[in-house]
Image (cartoon, rainbow, N blue to C red; front, side, top):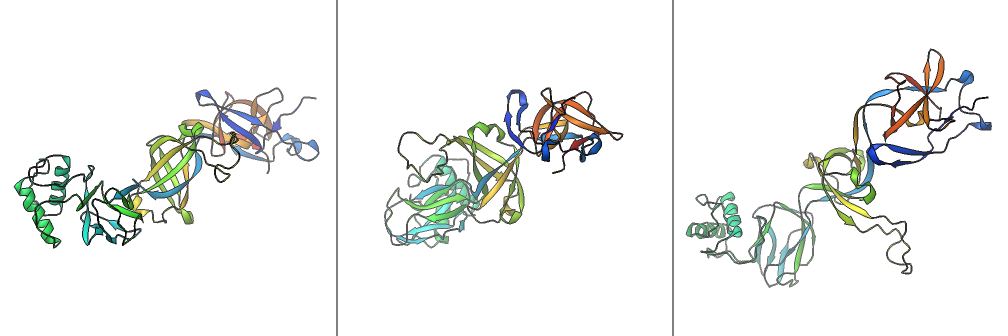
Length: 369
């Protein structure tokens, strides 16, 4: 008597990526009670599903954390006592106060070059350009040329207007402790110093971030190919809401997670189950619509590789053929026949199949689970 092929059911032990985009399957075929295969009388399967033609994605889901972009420490520009500090969670925009030292405000201006020196007439450089752009944007320097990196008499006049608006001494010069440059609006994540402290030059006062929402997650280095800059992703937020976005960056290798709570265990190199991780960040298509709390856990759906216009069947439609290899049971006109297939990509519970005898719309047998 010919050996019948066995249903693979849902017990695929592993799906291993191999070169060329194909996959190999380690299967554990299952039988029904008493060793009989799960088929109805007459050799027909208990249920069927159609062979489909369409796009198939090898995406996966990973756990991440919702946060904000560009976290950094904001250091004090000069000596003194901290007399006021922006509240945790507050957003500070151009010309807004970040903190005060000895009652003197340190205000936010936009630019990539840090405030590393006092600015006065005759100075030249990118920091002068940044100052002039900010004064112009705030309406104090309408006649300034923001691309001229020279601190001119007109720049000094604009600075005096700015100082007058804030009721400070109209010196026409900007002290190193008067301004902090950052790339854009800043959100205060936490205070590194408290009112009454004397942080001193170069000591952290605030930890700030950009105001744009992002997601950070880690992925096994072996799977890093599934996360490429620019790839679209979906994000499941707390409460079940969904959002779309794209991978912004795939960084260097991160330290593996220590599930044992730190380096305890005796120094000889246990940790064999630890895997190298890669840091990945995601930006949202509509960040203003993401309202979940900072550091909320989220689930990120990675698209992975996509095959266009391929034939696929449900994974549990696969048969382990008696002579080796895989097949499906095609059901037509009340009869069932086994068709050998070659396997391709797995994704979303389906598997790409090729075989000259298969066509879109055919019905293939699946077990009743």
